[in-house]
Length: 130
Image (cartoon, rainbow, N blue to C red; front, side, top):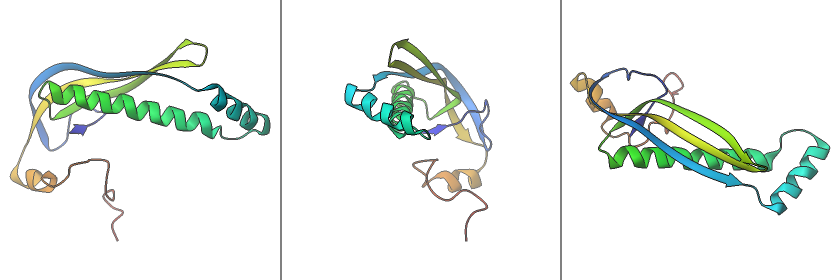
């Protein structure tokens, strides 16, 4: 599944728009977690307890977005965004959303380059190979 924040996907043509897809999760930190965060706040710096919670929450919303896109037959999501809102004290909603599309490679070379890539976020970025 290709997921991008842009409205186009270089090297691919959009052959069908399937509509809005989303992944929504609501999370809170436990009382023990809040106590640990309070101690970190006292000393200042990165509040790792909350950083970890935020990353896990965004990842869960992202995974739900991908699952929703796959359920409706998409092989890509364009215009992906996150949104977060506080629902109550220490309770946060995180929404990942975008447009589900079906794409196909523009040429055979592009198809060969992406044939083995199951995760677009893995591997070494172009230009950083040794």
